[in-house]
Image (cartoon, rainbow, N blue to C red; front, side):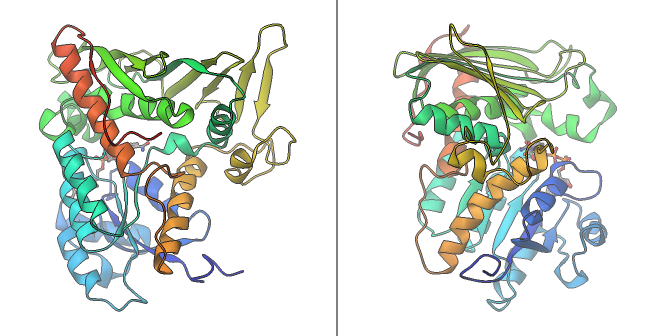
Length: 398
Ligand SMILES: NC(=O)c1ccc[n+]([C@@H]2O[C@H](COP(=O)([O-])OP(=O)(O)OC[C@H]3O[C@@H](n4cnc5c(N)ncnc54)[C@H](O)[C@@H]3O)[C@@H](O)[C@H]2O)c1
């Protein structure tokens, strides 16, 4: 069977962001190409046109497809023949630029993988949702934690009722790198993340609580009803929150918490989720992602390891694994699993089909909207001394 059968060719990627000195663009390029289903052929790699072109050889992008801006890239690529033009655009730039780039890509007919948070604010997210609905493009949001094999395993276990009714979700994303006021030292990643004109209305909550919230929604399918949130800025002079906790009331009566920190000494990327159901509870931690603990009163605690061949591994867990058990899989592979699911839809589209838009394996534009609504309501709640505010949005994934 050929690559991406039935189209039997690699999908062609255009990368926006990822220039020299940046972080996540390189991860996208590796994840997209991991399974030999895509090749990076074009890029607008930096906000600085000169640096954009200078960065292209780092990715083996040919000179004639190293563009100075995303506008230039979309314009030039749109004019190329079908068998050359990019199929999808990966947006790996700071938050305030996502909307304009994503909307232009969608309107030009390119599929999109956009990093999170999807836009700068909710109004932009809703407008983007409309643009996606009016097009036939595939649109994914890189909430990459949803791609871990044991997260997919847990999701299938939960959705099939193995844990009973889900009553509590505790999600946290704890970092320590902004304990120091790195923005004052003009550290690139810190500078825009703590600047409200670039990051959006929230700091840590926009940057990492959105991942933790999305993970709980993805794994449990519980629909949110209300949120009460308390955000704090502990580092003096910082413009946005660097710590916070949200409490979520779910529509089934369940309770969730999302805690995010960027000021906890020694903590790296500690994404932890614990889910309590009436028949069992589970716990997964991204810093030890090939293990998951499942507990039931009166039973020994069970440690599930990522093992595509084990009898306890369900179809979702097995499909998301590449290596035999014991060879650690982690960040790149999980990221690639978001791409893989989106590629399946892109191939369907390229064949003239209409891939599903909602409830996809990959986080989609509706999840992106939900993420922006979550940020907006958390900030508003915190501004009102943690008042309970609605958290139901039409975009919500079932
Ligand atoms: N999914 C994840 O795990 C994850 C991890 C880190 C960052 N992110 C998200 O990815 C995005 C980028 O974060 P980062 O830490 O890589 O930022 P970064 O500052 O390291 O890199 C941003 C890059 O985008 C470029 N850029 C800015 N505006 C541009 C434009 N208009 N056109 C082309 N390039 C442009 C910059 O020049 C730079 O190369 C953010 O939205 C962030 O929230 C996601």
